[in-house]
Image (cartoon, rainbow, N blue to C red; front, top):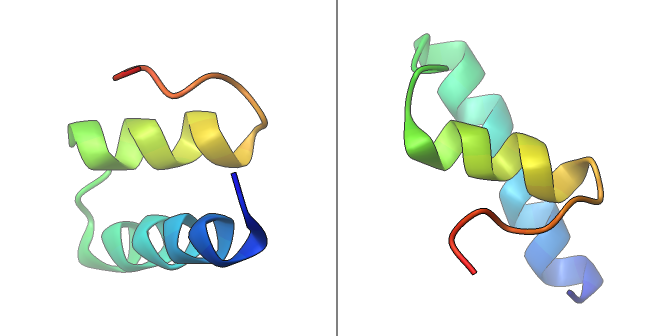
Amino acid sequence: MDSHTLENWRKVKQALEKAGKTDSMFYRRAVMILAGKKDPLE
């Protein structure tokens, strides 16, 4: 995954945390991807 895509996931994670939406699949995906783990939807 390129650095631009990783930065987008970082922004998604931060926005969801700010909105209190940490129970969403997008949030779980962002956490996994940013931790260097496999994307759960792949």
